[in-house]
Image (cartoon, rainbow, N blue to C red; front, side, top):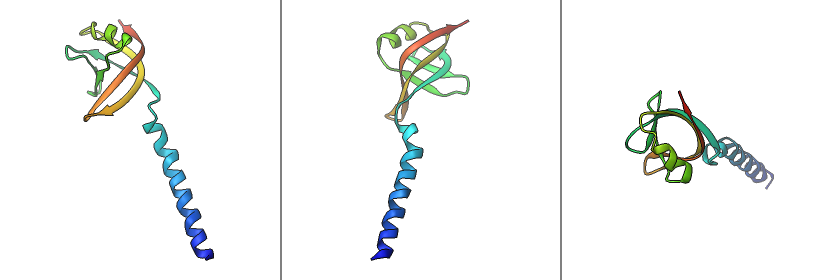
Amino acid sequence: MRRNGKKLVIGILALALVAFFAGPALSGDAITITGTINADNQIVTDDGKIYDVVDTEKGGEVIEMIDKKVKATGTVEEGEGKMMISITEYEVIE
């Protein structure tokens, strides 16, 4: 009986460790990206990552700045194989 108790404790600790490391990746914390707005309502970063801009108030303002470089902060989610950013604030980089 004591042996099964040890296995249970080890299993719980392993799950807690996985949750600790995976949590930030799944939580939707705000991040900041810098890139250029294209005509497809996307931000393309200098390293080639593409983020679709979610249709929000700030997102609507950003997508009108085609070919301008912006620094955008918001939450990023992956859906349908694409990265989508819901912008909460931004600034145009000259």
